[in-house]
Amino acid sequence: MAIKKNMDPKKCPMPVQDPVVRRNNFDEVALGYTYEMAVEEAKRCLNCPKKPCRSACPVSIDIPAFIERVANEDMEGAYKIISASSALPAVCGRVCPQENQCEGKCVRGIKGESVGIGRLERFVADYHREHSSETPIPPEPNGHKVAVIGAGPSGLTAAGDLAKLGYKVTVYEALHVAGGVLSYGIPQFRLPKEIVQREIDNLKAIGVDIETNMVIGKVLTIDELFEMGNDAIYVASGAGLPRFMNIPGESLNGVYSANEFLTRINLMKAYKDDSKTPIKHSRNVAVVGGGNVAMDAARCAKRLGAENVYIVYRRSMNELPARKEEVEHAQEEGIIFKTLTNPVEVLGDADGKVCGIKCIEMELGEPDESGRRRPVVKEGSEFVIDVDTMIMSIGTSPNPLIRSTTPGLDTNKHGCIITNGEDGLTTREGVYAGGDAVTGAATVILAMGAGKSAAKAIDEYIKSKN
Image (cartoon, rainbow, N blue to C red; front, side, top):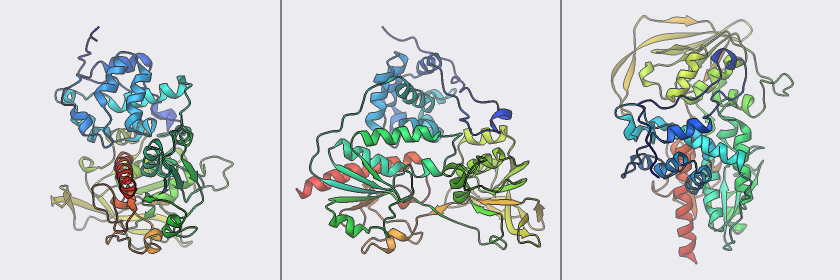
């Protein structure tokens, strides 16, 4: 029986915590669709024959097919379709920039709002977690071993795909918990850590081994991993080295990198009263940058009790790279956006603590190489913002440890590992790389896409050698 389409031009709104309530807690902001909401939203999908949404998905989920299952109330069927392509569906449904990918290509978006693809993916993954009692079955081993460096989204995706093909996969993670940026970078109110752990447990159930506290390049080298019998190695060590502006005052007490600030909060639970690694509770905070990480840091600072939290960004609101939803949530929670503003000096008091930042106003000039209008200084426009904490969120670079201990592994001037750009093959035979270690800081789903491509290439490489 044909399903009657829902031709509402707007997607079903996502239930969320009230902003006044949520800015005082670390509980998840978005509450998720109900069963009825998911079914009605799925009926908005036109099931286009050319599937433009699927072509825009970095891991090629058959989006119309899974949505059709939801519309027919076959939630487990929908989950099987998603999980065939994605190792982390509950994660992607929460943190992917769908508006720039699958939803950005949705035909319904031409004359209205796109189908809520991300919201439906989240619903299906959560429904499966809450209702399914199935235990994943490890595949038959094929007799070959692969090492994966880094237990972030790219490494976990590659590990999962390879394990499904019968490889004995060991993931080596430098931190004491797996998950990478999913664990240390994205706050609990956007991505609950129990969701991440459940996805990791699913990978372990199909045979993926994860060894934590293993700093590759220090505890073991890539050469030693080969000597241990690995047929190939996938480097997905991320980009955890923070960048700074190199302006006066950045060494003052009260200046954090976003990485340190978020790691203390997310991984070490610094927001809890009994935390062993407490973080400064500030009154006025400036976060420099305009991406998702900047939004995360600003919203965490507000939850820690800051009266005023500023996003300081040198371009306008139109150029903010953060997800639209994250910007809207930040605004609802009272984050103040100081756009067309650039810091030029961090000011300190007599005790060497931050007491303000000197800024200068900017104007937008001609487009730069990224296509965005280049910010230029507005002469004579200096002013000071009174803050006691400054958080730098202007990007990260790959840690140099692996490249410095691996002969034959070439990197570019930014420290990113050089690959052939197709399947992650590096300049060292049998060594593949992907995710932020290759691109610099990017999105979770792009890192996952790189992991999928590398897993396929590694499988073909090992088969060609045997």
